[in-house]
Amino acid sequence: MNRQKRGMVLFWLGIAVVFVSQALNWIQSPIYRDQSAEELRGTAHAISGPLFWVRTLGWNGLAFSLIGVLLFTSKKGSKLWLLGTIPMTALGLAILWEPSRYVPELFGIGGAIILVSYFGILWLWTRTYQAYEGIARTGKLVQLLGYSFLVITGCLLCLYFGYPAQLAIADLPIPNSLSINISLSLGMLLIVFGQYLIAKKQL
Image (cartoon, rainbow, N blue to C red; front, side, top):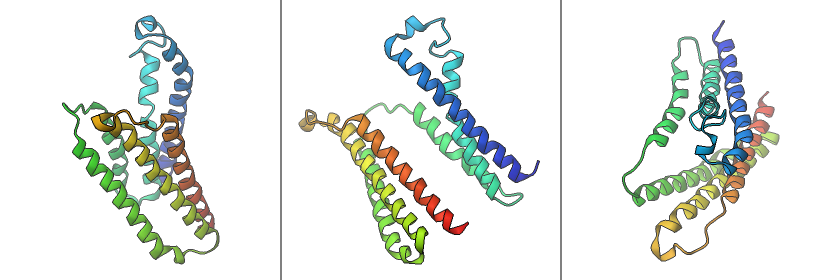
């Protein structure tokens, strides 16, 4: 099996793993909402049971798909596919990391990085937008809107986590988690649709 075929196998395997994980999530979420961990002990839905771990480890499918795409597009002998292990490694470390105290400085640094990156995208967009034509130019515009929604998501998260941690403004209303979900979903949807329009021009 050549490199490209292995890449496609990993790509589709990743999609299948994530699909199974999300299917279990849909099935188990109502159960977890209505029953305690003690009530589920000894059942197929027990915490740390087989189905729970299949659901949890399903996120590895994201890494499989990313590695598959990198294998498919890289040259023979290239180690570029190793970059696909970075996001899931970071996710694992983030889940295991338990700071001993609230660190507002990190939130400030993260927020600054997000904003500077967004302004960087806007600046680069003014320099590259004219190079695209027709449907590809529309795609770039759609992508820009998608990035804007991701920044909005960052702002909503800032309010969601920041307000309760600051005594003077702890009682102010915070965004609903559903609003955050919708904003993030719209951002990703617009980015992928914009990329589709750009790819359609190139194919």
